[in-house]
Length: 289
Image 1 (tube, rainbow, N blue to C red):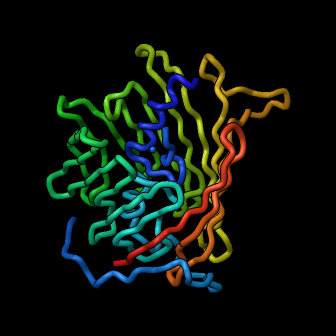
Image 2: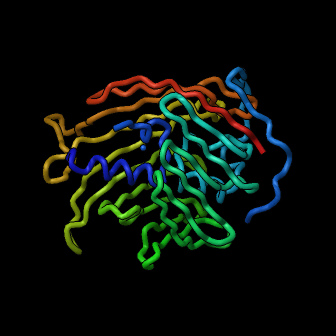
C-alpha cells in the first residue's frame, strides 16, 4: 500500500488541512467588521459553559469542514485569521461572513473567490483554477476543472449540514477521496476518510481508511480527537485480526488545552503511536472578527 501513500497525502492536503497530518516532510463578501483582537496562549481555561458551536451559522461550519478540520472550528465567535505552529505552519484567513477565504501550508496555497466562483490551488509554482458551484448561502456544491470534469462534490442533510465530500481525480491524480461527517446534534462527532483507485466502472481498489472521533468536555470545548488509520491488505480490504477487530496502523491522540476567553483551544499535544510514533506540540493563534 506504500505505493499510493504520496497520492493519498496530496489528496488529503489538497482540501483538508489536518492539524498535524499534512506536515509530513519527504502535506457573500462584505466589508470587514470591527478590528481583530489577537488571542494568545496565556488565557486561562474557561470554567463556565458557553454557547455551542451551533451558535455559528451552518454555512460557516460547512465552509470549515469542506476546507479544513473540525479541530479548527471556533466555539462560537467568528475568526478573521488563525495559524497553527508546531510542525510546520498553517495559516487560514476568512471573509467577513466567517467563510474560509485562503490558506497556506508550506508549499501549498489556496484561495476561494466567492464573487467569481473560482478556486485557486497552487503547489509551489504549479497553479490550478477550478470553477465552483455555490448554493444560495455559498455552500460549495461542487467544482469542475477547465475541461468541465467534476473534481469535487458535496452532499448535505435535511438540516443543511455538510455530510460528505468527494474529491475525484483532484490535482490530476487517480485517487478518489471521500470524507463523511457524522454529527451529534450540531456538533461534529466523527469523520470517516476513505480513498480508492477506480480500476474500471465497477471495481474500486481501496488504498486508505481512517476514522476521527471528536470529543468535547462538559463546557462544550474541544477536548480531544482520536484518529485511527487502518491497515489494508494487498487486495485493499481492512485487515481483521484474530479477535475480529480491525487492525490499526497508527493512532493519533490530540489533547487540547489553554482555552481563551472565547472557549477556543490555543495549545495541543498530539501523540502518535504505531508505525510512525511521535509527539507534536501545537500552538494556535487566533484573530477574531
